[in-house]
Image (cartoon, rainbow, N blue to C red; front, side, top):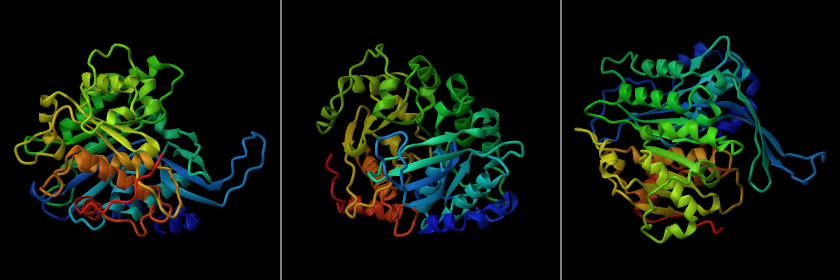
Length: 430
């Protein structure tokens, strides 16, 4: 498999310098800006990154002092920026005029150089990565248990010091382009994980997202702002809420799981959630539905709630004017056309052969949904149900140990064809 083969030559990869990687971006932009009907454009994947060491096939006896075994050790580019960028780059390799950029912070070390090599091999541009000579790249160790579930041990390193000013500096670099036509329009900016990035929380997060939208949007093109949560600490719900709630009005798509939603829960939500289109609300507790409603009250346009083996829940704000903010004179993204108040459940899909690795599943769901929601053109003007189904298919491929690293992975267009032709995998039964 593509990325596994990189891991097996990891010593050689460590010798690759940052400057040489910058000179070999897989997706240099030498084409004219695409028209609004072609679906062309860039997605910027920003935020936390770390070099993951996955210990695949770990035993789990239940004893703290037991000697556990694993089958294989594999390096991969981890964290939100890495997982979303590599997933999208692999999905869109066959699509010309589609660029995936990474904005994250790394050091000039083994881990940083290795992650840059992963990005380049997957097809994501490293042009916007911030390499800080004084920083140390984050690393994580992830036991992948035989059940398919995982653990995580991480040193966040330079993520702790990654500042909004540094982020905005890298966004400005997006417009530094050798092509006379300039870079293609940005369709989406994906950011994660604010609760693990202390300088990008609360009012600072809101200001950063406001500035990103201002820099990347125009009258002709609106950029989708999407935020993915991880590391939401339940030990102090006030701190957890203060890291996110002030920024919700700038977030078009918020992705989180059930546990994270309940940590962020507030008893002050005054609006009852709408009934689902398909009876899907029976999957969620009244407390969860109330919290989703609270996110909308604070200005978030769409909530994407991961439900694990039960799939995902998509909730669209009841405020039609909030959705219209994403309309533009030339390029109306799919999400701007959605019906206010829509709520749907999408299933998870079964991996028939049983080779499961759930590391990055949530990132893949988030990336796929953001791609669909920000789409332009007739083929990609999707309703919330189809956008959610597309996202679930992206996660399905990412969890499949045979396709997660690119080999045999269906393209974004091929996944859309599966939806249009109703040739979907079997639904995973909880």
